[in-house]
Picture 1 (cartoon, rainbow, N blue to C red):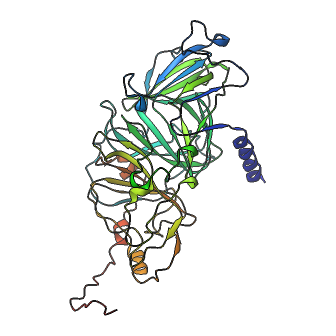
Picture 2 (cartoon, rainbow, N blue to C red; picture 1 turned 60 degrees about the horizontal axis):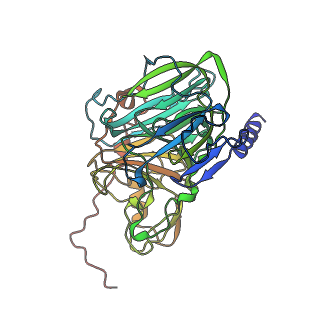
Length: 456
């Protein structure tokens, strides 16, 4: 009964939230309670409508070429500069220290990460962030971090702001109601959202909640180039949604806390009003969400494998052409029809690092050991591939058209950085699957020196 009521409430909330469509569009929005709140014909009038303050949020250097120039103008009741000084606070399990433990080149797999029970300590989104691995440096604006979040409570009178980079959030269990300066987004499992650098946001949850988070320093996510695919396919721009203006005019006499991630550390300050007081905004630098079911799969229809890059949803490019700081790749339900081909993922060593997570279902290459809410990491040049059961089954299977990954959604954060695993990831979380290597131990030699080609 309670579960049904919660489900109905979430449905009602989701239906009330409005969005605008398109990736990286020039958008404009004003709260319908204040018609005409967007200034006409200029960004920064001497006096803004309704007595608002004009504030620009820049996501790129002023002098970036127009296609790469990102900025939005916010028209707010009070500017974000009105706050008490920031002071450093404990980071918990959030870190950018990649030297806590010695390097580990082994294949690594984690069992599902533990979610704190609602009957125990209350843990919100920020308190529930745990860094698993990463590389690079937020100060030089070049690198990434991969985190998980496990929480059971909503953020109350506090918000988060990442000065270091962009967050790509992948919920795995439980819905997220994310309030931003630009408006609200409901993000459910099998959806993702991106909160870009500098944007303040708060997360409401509706029970025990878990997910994955990719943080990128020094670059923003883009849609991958399509090349010979042509104009259409993969993640289509129109399926990305950004929020509409929805302001809070709310004073908080007891103090509203703004938490700022800056140079890998956490800082907090207090103010006496909600930061979500933006009445209107316009620009192309916004948070956004995307439903993974809308991904238009491109796949092999003759023989062999296309590289998994054909499943890239978003990419954060490096300065080297064709090499990503990070790619977000999914493995959605699709048809497998390749003839004369071992269809699951092949055995592989890669100059990139591959971190995989599972939102739901069973991953085709490891149906038993890899679980929703868990993860794996195959670092630079670490060999990996299907387990023995997958190999044996698929070398003798009848090759007919079949649905692959039905009811499943696995994903990969792939990066050109050589990833360091944190002490939390290797020890503290106590979720390391130390038996992972055993899934390949039964592989046996099928070599036959007397083999002759078929006379067919």
